[in-house]
Picture 1 (tube, rainbow, N blue to C red):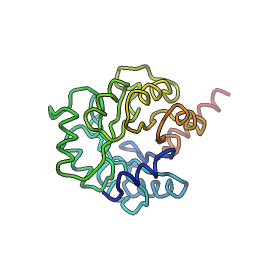
Picture 2: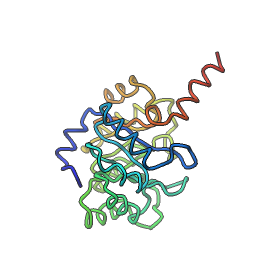
Picture 3: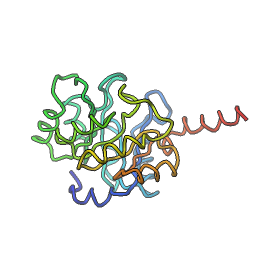
Length: 228
C-alpha cells in the first residue's frame, strides 16, 4: 500500500473521489484511457480515484493520490469484487483500498464478508471499502472489519428505493450508526448534490458518471433538447 491510513484519512476527509470507469464495448473502455482520465481528475482536485479492472489499476500507478480498486465480475447479485480471489488480485494490482460488495447477500465463494476481509488482510496490507445498499449492510460491514462504508449500492440491492439523486437519508442513517468513515456514492450528478451529501454527514464524496462518462452526460443534454 502506497499510503498509510492516517494519510488517507487526511487526504480524503471532506474530499472528492472520482470514479473512472467505462462499460464494456464503449470507446473509452481502455486501461490507458482510464488512467489518463484518472490523471486529469487528480489535476482537477480529486483526493482519490476509483478504478475498475486490474489493468486499469496497474496503468494508473503513477497517480499521486490513493487508488480505490475493484473488479466487477458479472452483472447481477454480488459482482463488485465478489470473492477473496478477486480482492487479492485487486490488492496485488496496486490498489490502496480494495472496494468490494458490502451487502449481506451470499458471496459466490461461500465466504462471509468478515472472512473475506480477514483473509485478505492476512496476506495483503490494504484498506477495505464496503459498497453497501442499506444502513443494515453498513452496520454489518463495519462489524466485519471494513475501514470505509459507502452508499454505492443504495437503490440497487433491493432494500431501498432508487432515489433521483444521492440517498441523503441513508447517508444520515449510516453516519449515526457506525464509527467508520462513510463515503457517499451513487447518483451524485451536480456540485450541489456533492455538497448536500457532505452536509448529510459523508466523510468523502465519490462522483463517477457526471465527471467521467461522456456517453451518459451527452445523453442528458440530448434528452433535454428533445424535450424542449
